[in-house]
Length: 391
Image 1: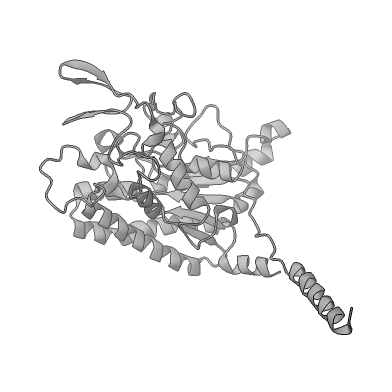
Image 2: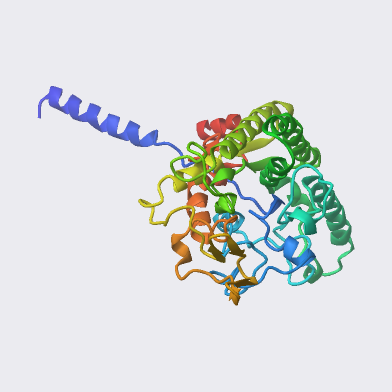
């Protein structure tokens, strides 16, 4: 071999070695010891069921094989979050039996709003446990945890309690705001709803600040769903005017209000990042993920998004899922369909487990988040993640 060939061979080998030596490092991941969730029925794992009338079968039977306190045939997005982080499903804070708070707690209740409402759950289904009350409960929970942990005399006594030092390392999730819009559509015109939005998103921001001031640093905040795409919005609607619905059967103006709410929420979160510089705050575009499913039901293996799996809904007779009613002079029970895995809507308001799973898969990998990072990196600010990747 000539000197030229030998040199070229050496040069090629050097390049191969150098390429191997600069292979990118694997992305850093977070180890969250716990999840603390705040929300409404989209993430309630038993709170409202423990506080008032238990949610009946066939709710829960698709996965848990019994009612589980969830408004679904199986798991919610918060359950898939727990699975992704290798944590147990969250016990509801309001549930007194069979609970374990070692790895977090769920303060969400069905019907909750961000703003306190002056009405009872027996009127329109609005929970008395607004976000303000959920934060009050969290504050008490955290203080009591420290007290009980210090008083515990054995490892067994501590085994179902959170470790006080882990509150600062936990992931704090929010999925609330849909019922604020629901109240607005019932009581206000659209201009009044818009005027109420800054106060609503500010109250959510204040809840985040409260947790931040106590050491919380990682926040995962869902925006609100496409409200007009819930089949319940079409109940008792006749002779619908042209242009009232979009091409997928969703109520246009309600979705426009939800979109405006989400814009204001995102803007407030961007501002919140400057106010809380040590916080990693992820904005999760659940609206876009759910609308992507609604607009592609056939290709994704689902039926028409306005079809309802559970309950009896024929003409203007509506018997809710799990309830007994009367139709044409006969007793009728609101049963579940045979194939819930093909339905987006479980009960005309809440999503079926298969739809929740589809959405969870898209948001947990960062496809619909700002910043676009997966949940396993949600403890890092963008600056911190950049330095982690560089070092």
